[in-house]
Image (cartoon, rainbow, N blue to C red; front, side):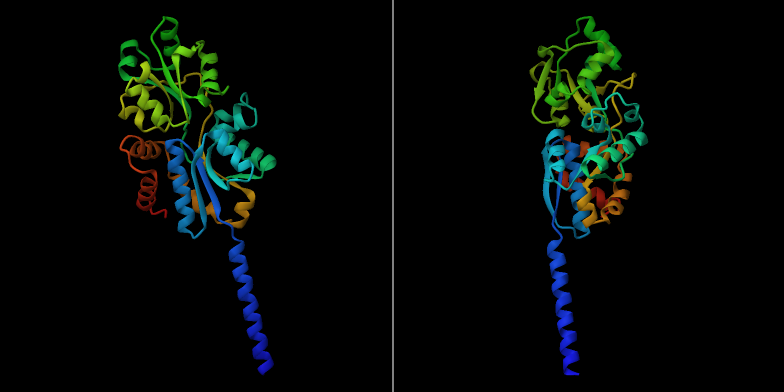
Length: 306
């Protein structure tokens, strides 16, 4: 009897040691995001959902621009971050593929390619399109009847005064400003561009609103809240130059294997982030000056998603 008791004690002790070892093996997930307003919002939302479910995390939110963050996760230096489906055209050099113009097709394509080539998993996307666009000051739009990029092309060909605040990424990437220029037949020279560090549209929009260095237009995103609030008007893209950029969490397959419940935790969260919601939340950060962490926490609580 004494031997059996001792044996049970040893087995229990071994089980405890195994449990402790397993807990120690559960590495914290490094949560990243891009440097812009929405990147901070979405990064904080992911971070807070994981923390609520007891997942240990390392905060790497607002790490850098697209190339920096993408490079970090493909190098294994990040575990999860929010990305946009349309960027698959850039990542895989497939800008001419029609799939990027369709929300579901673009999502399925980048999901398949990233799984095969990079062991990255795209989780459920948000029903929103954060596509690149150009916004102009309201007074400029009204005076010159600017509602679309085609109207902008006409205005520029007539010698209209124009200066665009944008990130270097927007100015240089083939699928961004150069794609607009090619499709609508205009070309901005260096004097018509103000290149700002980072990719935060809150900065570019503010520059246009305040006419910094003669700026009267700004790089913007479809889900930007500050555009209307600061008196700017987004120009439509009638030729559909830009892909659909639906935000979605991207996670390393190894990290998802470690915490497989993450997909189910984040699905209802991102499903609730439609375009109107993102515009409202982004405006709280960029216009009202609220902290992204606080905005994320309050929204999750209101939606009972924490």
